[in-house]
Length: 254
Image 1 (cartoon, helix red, strand yellow):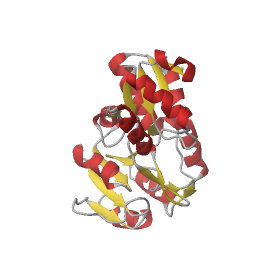
Image 2 (cartoon, one colour):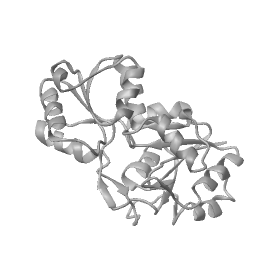
Image 3 (cartoon, helix red, strand yellow):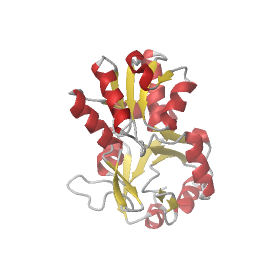
């Protein structure tokens, strides 16, 4: 028995379009009795929306199969401190996960009440969003990043990610964010109870996906279909051009 922790953007799809052999690879794993967890550092959408996207691509998935950095953030913080009040820079993925656990999410009018500022990807972010986040942090709110991925792959190329917003606020406040997503400890604390047997991490980034596997003793599979195109000095267990090659080469090992 093994558990495959699959990144999504840059691994299963890119800019919403499925990558070659995505559905076939997931079916290949499940036919061999492997558990599949879809893990993304992107916190913008809800788990339900990600599951719906995967199903449209021919990859059967339920909400319980999907873990986002928003889910990790809400689970981890609620476990550590209970429900609280947060000012959010990010999408509905964060707000819905917090609300489901009894948190109060405040807007610009309520920034002084925020005990936490939680930052994730939001392509529609404006200066006012960041201004009130900075004010709340300076007012004593804990500074939390769902992830600090500097970039993510899009149709036009490599786009600024949540880490760019986090860096803005770190520079503006002189505070460092505590990061929840891959490759940091909160992500593993949430994922570990879901892992059955040997853990495998499949991703397209050295600094998050592969580092996540390195830190927690998982086998690592790097795909060259997303952000990373050169491996560098750190060696992964496997490097594949795409999921089609991964399926062929891993057949004898799984």
